Amino acid sequence: MSQQHTAAPARHFATVSVADRRDWWRDAVIYQVYPRSFADSNGDGMGDLEGVRSRLPYLRDLGVDAVWLSPFYASPQADAGYDVADYRAVDPMFGSLLDADALIRDAHGHGLRVIVDLVPNHSSDRHEWFKRALAEGPGSPLRDRYHFRPGKGKNGELPPNDWESIFGGPAWTRVTEPDGTPGEWYLHLFAPEQPDFNWDHPAVGDEFRSILRFWLDMGVDGFRIDVAHGLVKAEGLPDLGTHDQVKLLGNDVMPFFDQDGVHAIYRQWRRILDEYSGDRIFVAEAWTPTVERTANYVRPDELHQAFNFQYLGTAWDAKELRAVIDRTLDAMRPVGAPATWVLSNHDVTRHATRFANPPGLGTQIRTAGDRELGLRRARAATLLMLALPGSAYLYQGEELGLPDVVDLPDEVRQDPAYFRGAGQDGFRDGCRVPIPWTRTGSSYGFGDGGSWLPQPPVWAELSVEAQTGVPGSTLELYRSALRVRRERPDLGAGESVEWLRAPEGVLAFRRGDFVCVANTTGESVTIPSHGRVLIASGEVTEADGETKVPADTTVWWTAER
Image 1 (cartoon, rainbow, N blue to C red):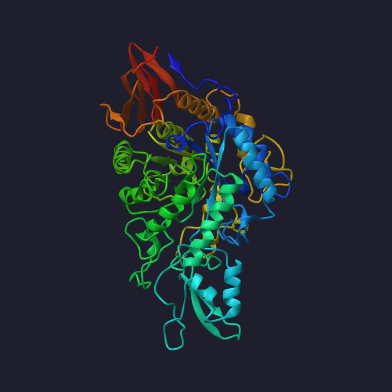
Image 2 (image 1 turned 90 degrees about the horizontal axis):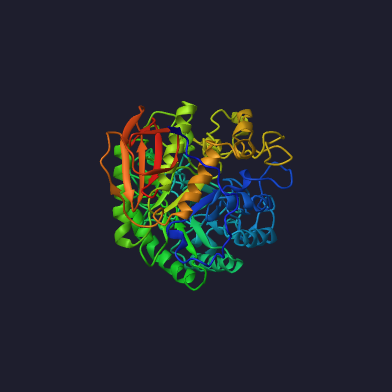
């Protein structure tokens, strides 16, 4: 008998108080909202907080536990809000503090927790501190809160060291002093509009402890820490001695990334968080060479979770997946932290497109690849991820099976890395195109005034409207999987899996009376049945105690009848 096994979901989960369950984050499913691309309430083509608020029932019914909001702070938007001018204000393009307050309150009313982005590695060059540092000139105490240095060379015309920006080019920019002469240089590991803070200066730590309390008092349930690995730089800012430094990221400890000094900062922050009720959390965006070094960020007195970028970068291959799953679980177990699993976010090519291309191309891919293959693998990869112990992160629109938009015209691109050479590929705009809600309209329901990045016409049939209630659709697959995960205590919780024997190219593991099998090969495989099929990412055939699992398909079973 051939079955799809994606039953229509219950449309309304019972809402619960955000404080009802302690340690909720250990097995939570957290949904990333990129505010400018989620929902536009005022028709200006840009998403906003009121738009997010209007769509909270959708997220509740999808079955997620929390919402992580990318930055909405006051910002010149040189890097889509990751250049913050005021950490205690909402940028007018997104709304106001009253809108933020209403969103947090409404989310809690729907049983959803709210995590906000925090950007402590750098500010905007329009931040009041930096503007005053420039205006006051050399010797200004404000310059000590950033990394200002004299240049090398006869007239200071060379950067202070050989560090390169992640976005390409030197990591230093020379300023023009108030008297009009060329002056000191300042450090920016990202865009020139994003000067790095000097975390050796006590005023920086004082300021961010105050910012934490401001948003905790507003009611947020946690913070995702941007560039959590970057705050502390090696003493003396030593040369790295090589070029193409972006290619070294994630392979070794760098003088500007993953320095051991960051952990003292997070121990201070943890003490602040623990003063507040409601089981609030920190999540680290920490690019490290190994999962073992990632585990340092989630020791019991530091942060709660850290993104598992090693998993995100793993190919759709059973052997490679099993290796990274084992390494992750083994690394997290000694520190008592949950593993986290993620396949897509606002900085990488969506996994429906990554898996449509040959492996080894990295996480920013310029080609569409085989769309059908990519979607099939993406659905299977999602079911595998949601079956693993720990917490899972979803990126807006992946539940619709959205691919990256790889053919955006050059004139509409806004990723700052796109305009700088020798850095990131600069194609992050492709995963940031506003998501479709309806089959029709100027922006497929995103808003009444078009969208800040153009949406392809094929998105009409990928919209929420087009997929809702359609058996086998990717949206209904997500809804069903999240419902099953919420209903079953043997999913999400725990810290290990029991691997089962399986054909080459197939992953199989047991967790209590639950079994997950993922066929990563391009051919169907026939295996013994493991009970009753709960859900499958593709059509499976069951007969005489065996199950035929198609290529690139994941199946969930339960021993219960």
